Image (tube, rainbow, N blue to C red; front, side, top):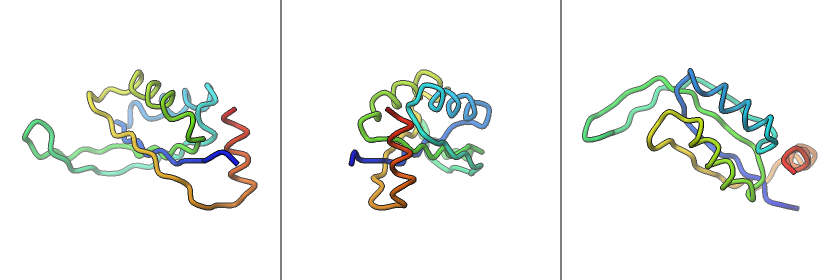
Amino acid sequence: MDESVAILCTAPPARSEEIAKALIEERLAACVNITGIRSYFRWEGELCAEKEDLLIVKTRKERMKEIVSRITELHSYEVPEIIALPIIEGYVRYLEWVLEETR
């Protein structure tokens, strides 16, 4: 079975829905969950605190480059957080669905 991954991406609330819909419509992702978070980070020497959305993108590993490219096209940040975590195990029927939806 191909490898599935969960990609984590933070985005401003005004952009997260657009990113999620594009990834689903273009079959780059099977599912995107969006939840509100508060992020603390250092940017250009300053401590920043922002309300953001966390997008949890379920897809296949081989789609990673396409997803990074698409998110950076749509994202408003200069350096958006886009990281992938391997899905070690899961419900087989769900993982098969993820792979089917991202062909």
